[in-house]
Image (cartoon, rainbow, N blue to C red; front, side, top):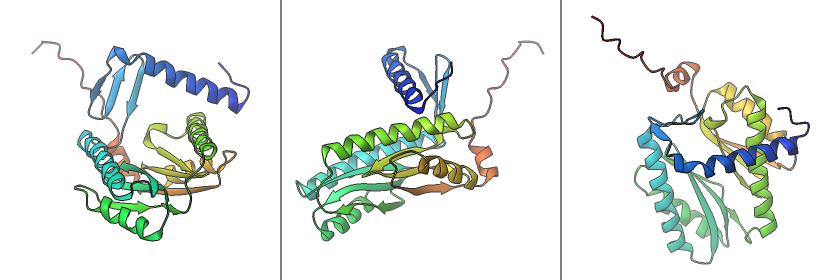
Length: 216
């Protein structure tokens, strides 16, 4: 099927995501970072252990930040391969530094990228626009065909798009160019772990061995 406009492609992508969620009762199988179910295979370039660490880091970071700030800010955390991106707002500069120290002290955190702004919290309209921009960037990555969309994590805050992932320099440049071309994106910030083409080949899922025939 051919979609004539970007908005039609975005609508189709969101519908597909909704359908995937609705079918979650089919219990897809998770094997070494690859989800296998129906006709879809979703790969992740992190090990399964690292994925668990990232989820744990995000939970611990959220609790620490809430305990530290109370109602003095609204900070989001995104952990990818144990690198934590902080976005959102706080009311004062000391709070920004305190949040970074608190998150940096969590077990298994390798580094913290502190993109927290000092000022008033984003409005509901800003947050809604950021959600839409994230969806549009992801849809554009899907449309591009020459990048592996599951290799990227997209975070948007106040029109600034943050790109995370383990990618080659070529993939980093291509995804950045795609994101910059999305209407409404104010700026693109790269929070990539850049790997060589040889390292990328090692990260790709290996084909399953052929089944045994039972013959000697």
